[in-house]
Length: 123
Image (cartoon, rainbow, N blue to C red; front, side):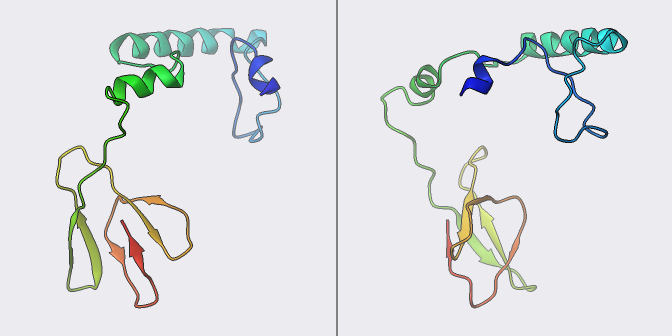
């Protein structure tokens, strides 16, 4: 938490040469123009999107869940193709589907899954 409070206004890293982001280049003269370009690009992008990153999380939750009730995605339909891959089909265009195999972490469904008999799936 202290790291967030002490963070500088701007951060710019050379992630190829400094993958652990230990040297902030935002205030190095050689990078002033690049920082200015990137700051302008970010400002332009923020002005064209409905970005809410400055809002407290509780306010975002109230907008997303007006009745303070988290929406539940309808159970997707599924089929198994000839390659024994599980195909999940969301019921609504903008539904996100997550899945978990055995004790693995939850993952976002982005492509057909090859299912083996040892896997028990939860959607």
